Length: 65
Image (cartoon, rainbow, N blue to C red; front, side):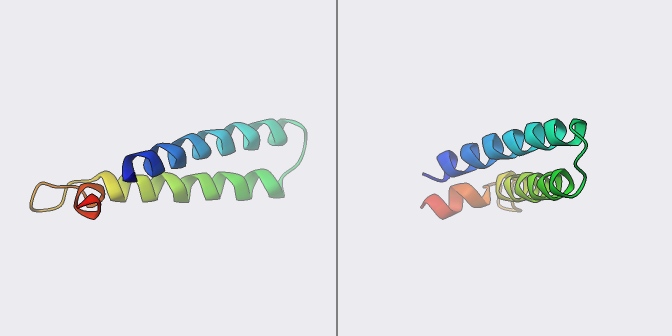
């Protein structure tokens, strides 16, 4: 279940970045910036959950148990 949540978070972050680029090209500034920040936060969360701990397991794998 955790793998699915991490996958959805990455897909959502990619969609947010694509939407931010689209809106940025149309001339908007505030919403695309906020969308890019949200995407960066989501990607950072996925990286944190995916990095191995000192025991060699990821937080996602230890949460699944």
